[in-house]
Length: 518
Length: 86
Image (cartoon, rainbow over all chains, first blue to last red):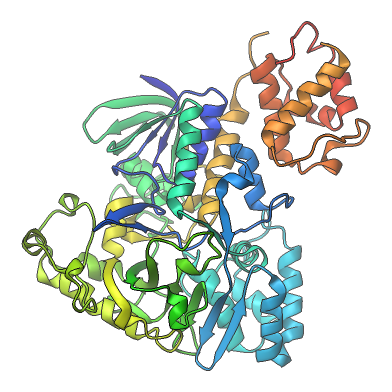
């Protein structure tokens, strides 16, 4: 079977790329190792409850008919009507640090007035920063790369405000520790502070269903439980893939959303080193071990706890849709030495979007930065593949039979990993209490996933949610016909990932099509 | 295909690309980009749709010929001759 294009991974970027190619009658197949689509933004059922993975909110909110914004660009390219997305805006969110809280919403003026109130001597600088962000063209791939912090410090002199601005932008998209690239800072600033948050009533399921339906309707083929073991190539040109089961599929073009490092591994040995190499990297790196200039695996992974409450969070006085917090004045966006860093994080109350119907479950989700190696090293005497959903029993679910472990769970889960999840669940909840009301007495069910879960279900090395700190803006890998899409191409968030798939499909397949015979 | 049908063909394509856009009052003499939310990705799609629907090939170098409805008609008149509105 020969295809015009093989797409590795049925996440946002892979599905969006697939739609574009199928729309224009390319023979295309999306290969997904997992038994469900979505990649880093997926969903699962647990004890009869529907949970999302990844998506707290869609960033890049745009009102219907808004022009020239990423969301509307995406809708046009995929032929999706604005109404079909079923978007409902956040109420308001906040950045909460010791002694100071800045509220923001999809109306930028709220954030501006909050900065003026809390940091009166910084507001002129904040306005100047806002102008610099507005005027910067983040789509200009020729702009010199620069770090964001020195630029921001030209406008913002109070380190507390600086970190409060960086905090949400980093949590929602930075593959780098401590700092961001300026162009990525601009993308995130616009998508979060200028455009803002929204969510479909049914969460990420709804977005994925739209994409899957559109893809199938256009004639695209999706194969689940079909992992790619190797990317085949001859004379510097991709020719297809070898699957986990040993069979091969050939294609003119391979688009990989597996990540830069991971794609390099699938290409194999010295050539793979070139895929992961910096643009100035050499093709003749050593065949074993990290080659010169190899793209590093990202260090930012996360745990997320999901607590199901017995009542809406707002009845406990929790008004925000999302809280980005730090318990220290300096915000440390870095891989922690310990299993988890619970001193900062993101608290999401999905029920606090302006949804038309009260959701079935009243959730509080808490995301913290975590250390993949520590979680990966914990004892667990079962192959993760046999457990469809990672689970924890609910340490706070006092009196709730819903969280008691089954005998099978106890057999399959060693104490180390399981106990760590229990301990960190409790720590994570305790460390948000300076920012939201104590919801713990109202928890009736909990679940938690870790960097290990992310690595298992997405294949991303190190459970690196935002991929490698090195991005490949053009998608080129050094192997003709093999291109990077998704997080490691460099567009961020759900909208960014989808736009990544679209722009790479356009550039490397649709715009390469030979002229039709006269 | 008549000149008017060529305009209809282009407008039908734009409606498919952006169903949320009002295309009922396009001035054929004015650049489409000035009247509608169309970027370079959308012009690629107009070209792709022309190929898919009518087998008409528009090379990259001729994209600017599609700037307004009037210029579309002038450019496509020969290419669309004998084609039927899809």
